[in-house]
Image (cartoon, rainbow, N blue to C red; front, top):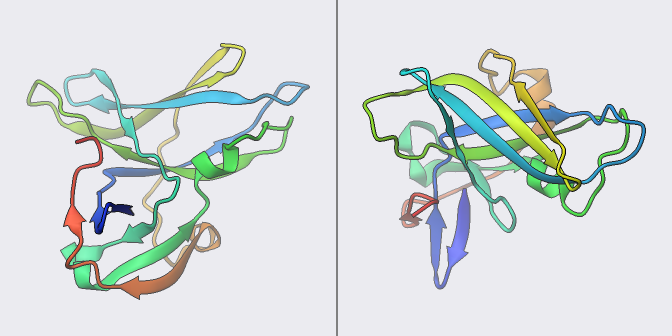
Length: 165
């Protein structure tokens, strides 16, 4: 993810990019107040991940640490799809959330297992364990419809910073 900080362009890595599909199963529209994502660790604990705000950010794919050939992407980002918008009944909204792993005090490692807690503006919470999905290759039809390559940029001179620092 890239963004301007003063006169510098900064890039911050996302440890996880999840595609979430949210469907309001109630009979009336609802506005969401928050979405929290947790990941299971090797010591069987659930740890809340840090959500990266995608507003005003460029999203890149950088393969093999090749910052001179970063792919600028156009994505359906959940933050932007839900901004000032109600979730209508039975109409799914699908978008990506970008996440960072927090530091954990043990030698535990994060597993590829996630759960989400969604809260609406009335305070109702809905917790779900997210289904495991296979890694999607860039040529896959679903991903191709959600992710589009805009251009390639040289980010070798960009400042690199962990988002939460």
